[in-house]
Image (cartoon, rainbow, N blue to C red; front, side, top):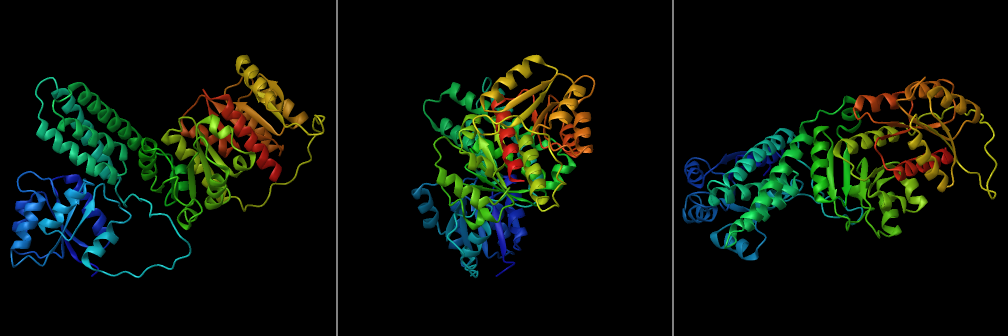
Length: 511
């Protein structure tokens, strides 16, 4: 039954385009209609194998259309399934009583839609060989949905703003309720679950009696700001090196909050990567996660060591990124910190996530490269209590930053030297060969890039972390092209620097 014809009936243009995109990609012949009356007229000379219909539509609703299809001897053989945002057993039972063979809940799960449609059509598919028990199929954004997502966000921003402005003039509750219902259905399917949540809350407020204008205004404001924030994340062009590193990659997002995963899924869509969403309750060693190229795990307070170890094993060596609050990441066991290819601490905006994913991907792809030549190192400082202390050079022309970082690193058992200009920093590195150098980009006499260039040209065995207030991607890329091992953007939390220095030290010890 591959290639079976399907008629999709929905008053939302976004939903129609989305369903046509998803089903056509799976090999079905798809036609669409925005009104039930028009759909019935189409059935005079078109006999689809299945009709997928929204229930709530202006004019004739989906259930009445189903009754007419099933009541006509010419069309009663057509199968009908309801598209519904309701999870109520009563509403779903009404769909079955009207004659529907089944229903599909909105937001539509793009990963399971084709299988659900084939099941409704009676098509049997061979079950894949079972290797192990796997979690529920993750949600994967459909191919080529970038333009559709951007259109949804732009229209949503304009209409939510118009609704806000209309509150002081005239409230059109019917129109607003219909639009909120549409956003609730389309938002989750397009990868924006926060939009779905806010729209459903708005629907609930409109249904209350008496109406609470203040709460409704706040809900619409939240929607408008969310639309605008997502538009900004969608429209920023990504650097070519990030696109090359992540294009086509499968990225597992494990336990991320909905408000974070929205923007990250959108950002990954821009670089043509495939985000797969997993709950923290899923099996973290599953085959589904193992098959992903990279995994972001949201570390939560109180997460036990066994769950973290399972996540590391499921992701594979060098492919796990730990995300969360700095304190939670700092309190992880050293072995778990060593398993992380990258940290996403604090805010981890979508652009930062893409950059860290790209770096982790590049490190994974070059892991098998020939080892660097071993260069004899100068004698380390005397061990303290029989244990050698790591040596770190801090180079920055800001004395306050130097004093703060030196104090914090020493509290974590590291020996620190300082320099307030590039030439002094390079002299100290040549003479003492510290394990890690933390270099500010903007320093007098020689900037951080020049110092880094000299370190690599002379094969000095010092790992380098770049500090910079510059947030443009080319500046970060330049640092890595010159041989930097990590970077931090000012202002930063000193504890994040500690975590990154410790990670580099552990990597150096294993090398």
